[in-house]
Length: 444
Image 1 (cartoon, rainbow, N blue to C red):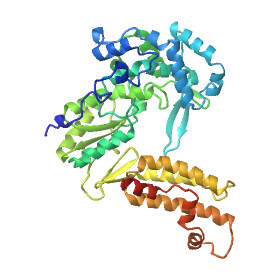
Image 2: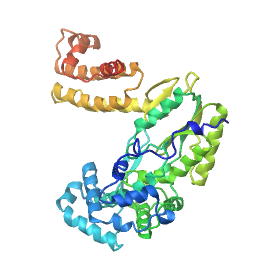
Image 3: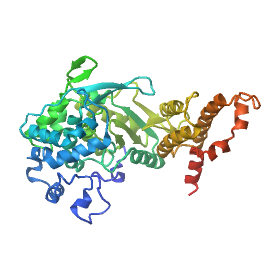
Image 4: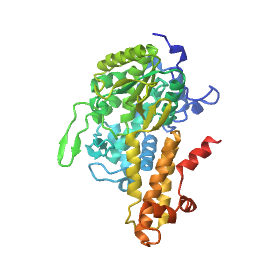
């Protein structure tokens, strides 16, 4: 198999384009309440013994807890099992943060149960989501403030999920680049029940590669062993890390870092976003080898590929393709995958009920706001996608108008509605047009 390792982006993620500027400029996401310039310099040059000690005092520092609280407050979110809302904590934040500081400093802090809810998915199968209490979210955010720069220093450039300065759009651009540079086969990989299958012993070993602070490691263990509350039932999972927890995305990247390194060591092109990943290969043989490497290393992590959802596809064959981060890639084109299209239509229906009592202007404004966000992500789809979306939106709005205006002059069918309320009518109301935006952006 040809070695493409020299064609890969650099192993370490460049935090800035050049080494110029202060050390603070090179670590813009590092929370100043934790990471002094002296610590950042040590981060770049390496610490004695290669591992970090004495971190707990940074976690429980009042300034760090305050910064963590501001992040939790900004993100809002639902109440946990104790029923306390962000607004409730805000009313007594000063005293509550002082209590958290003392609990953490003395080693007495104990996380509360995670409230489990189920989030509907377009596939029909709901996804479990764990909602920690507000105070647990603050402590996890404080932990993340301390740990993230330490591990970001070693993460590879092919990992994009939930990392500072990186996004799903970056991952999609990488996939596009590889497809245009000669990828013929893709390993469309699905790690079976990843967040439920994280092995705590394996994760602890990965954490200990960089940190050697007993209280911090013990606090992470407590969060991993948090009980789960669902309705009136409570239990403690034997493994995994709850989706929805502040710390979970970072722990997932720490857990899968060795997989990134192993794949790159084999010269394989991988793009990973949390537990979603694709291998982009130049031949069927390379794809088969890549899948074998995936299988072998995941077994070391006590994970496995989903036997039905993982497959090798040829990107050149008609009808072949793969889904990644909401997009469907097929024969040099991409569009929203079927589940994404279904989700969009459901959102449009929810915003445009035929018996809506709101003014048409208000409905159009809500739909337009939603469409702007959707278009920003899916703007690189093939053109006919946008015509379908705009047409569906206008049909929903005409149905509202037909219900309100029962005049028989133009009939009650779609043809009559199209005559009475043509496309220009909605344009004049300020309805966001994905088709017009796509044409405008591609003409620049």
